[in-house]
Length: 262
Image (cartoon, rainbow, N blue to C red):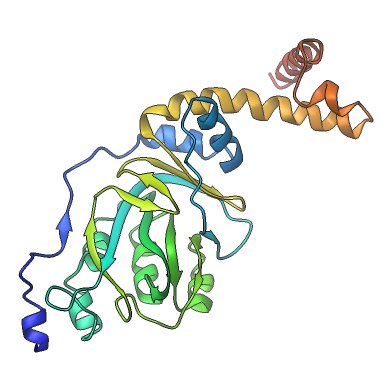
């Protein structure tokens, strides 16, 4: 089979999902104040248990993002439809190039790659373009390449590691974008909110985000109070979590703090 024949597969690629609504920018900004741990815990309390993407770790520590999910799906290669033999000559016609043209400011690109150790889903040039388009960060259920240059770019990335391979060099092929993806065992829909920090990446369903924000703010505030009291020598069981007595003490402290800031 020739390269030209591969460029005209029997199944039209790339696949693009239906139009979707990105998360409200104000809501995303509020989610940016919520840690991944708190978001995960609050969603668990709401009955949504699989939200943390197992596998992706920060390429550089100390970074935090929240953004509307823009999704990219890799699929296994099948030579009569799609293979990576022609490298970028073929890849530029795939969902990998197309999804980068769809990036809007604040987007988090979420990539389904099955944890593959042999597919460098994005590299320096693509991440550079992603940054220019205003993307907030990238979460890859798989690997990247050109890690030193990407670190220099400062784009926050969560991935399972690095590889010298290009995206379609081995077993996968960029197939679809703006579609539901499975990343690290978690379902991510286009427009969901992704929160990621040193503890990992968490998917917050868009419809649940207002409740997560509301409950997380109180949770994070009382944890500040509890840390203070523990540092002062208080008993753990009295302040983590709060009892009815320590809750009343916290609320008094909180009101005093807010009054002093007016």
